[in-house]
Length: 106
Image (cartoon, rainbow, N blue to C red):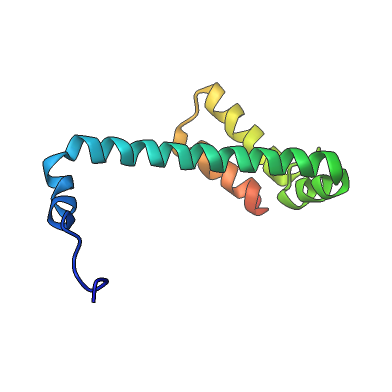
């Protein structure tokens, strides 16, 4: 049968990565970059579509994440930035911010 025989260039194709490593690595990096950019573009389109078509869903998501005016997430990041700008230690600032985020009393 014709289909069972290996292609005459199969050994050459198998050794291409060994012979041209810079070409295969560069094309691999370009592929990763293109897929990341495509994913970021898709997420941006999704966010803009939701923001335009379903503003109620966006507000619901903000409230659920605690990003509203009086949300815990906003308060935790405010406490973190305030503590870091005052010169407090990083560990203490993160601990205080985490306590605010989880709802514990600092």
